[in-house]
Image (cartoon, rainbow, N blue to C red; front, side, top):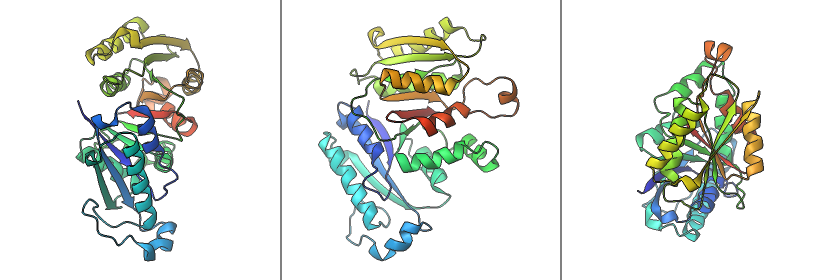
Length: 293
C-alpha cells in the first residue's frame, strides 16, 4: 500500500535532513506519495533580509509565496528525491503562511491531510524539543494533548547512510503498541530492515513475555516474518539513556517510541508524561526518532 508522508522544508537547502533520511531509508521511494510543506514565517529575521528577494517566477505547483532560499531548498529536495527513483508526479509542494505557530501549523496540516507520518528535519525538531522540554507550560501540554497530534512524527538529525534497521522501545503501554503497529505498516515491504523489540525494564509490573508476544503478533499482521524480528530487554534506572546506548551500539537507522509510556508514582500523579521522548529528541544523533501518539 502506498504511504503518504508530509515532509517539512525550511529556508536552508543545507539542512534537508528529513529528505536525506527518506532517500537513504527506503529501497523504492516510488511506493510513496510525498507532500513537501514550507511554512513562511514573516516574523523571522531571515524574512526581514529576504522580503525583497521573493521568488517571482510563477509555478502552478506552488501554493503561496516563497523566498529565494525556500525555493532553492524545495528544488534541492525534489532533486534528491528524483535521484532516489521517486516519481516526480508523486511529489506535491505546499507553502502556507504561519498562522498559529510552526508546531501547531505542522500538526494541523498533518491531521487534515491524513498523512501516515510527518517528517521533520533538524530545524523543525528544535521547535519540537522546545515544546517537550516545557512540561509546566500549559500551552505546550495542550499541544501534546491536542486532537491535531494524530500522525506519527519522524524527527531526523543528519542521517548516517551506514545505519539500518529499527529499534522499537516497548513498555506495555498502548502508545508503544501503536509504535509497533506504525513500524510494521511502514516496513511491511521494506525487507532490507529488521526490527528489534527493546524493553528498558524499570518496573516489575510488566509481563515481558506477554508484551513481546503481543508486539510480535502486530508485526506478523503486517506480513513481517519471524526472521526479521528480535527481542531484547535490560534492567535500567535511566530509560532514555539505555535506549540511546542501544541505538548507538546497534547502529540503528531509527528508533520508534510511544509518546506517552507507562508512568508510575509522581510522574503519573503530576501528568509529566513524555519525559523519555523529550530526552531522546535532545540527545539522539544520526538516527531518526519516530514518535507515535
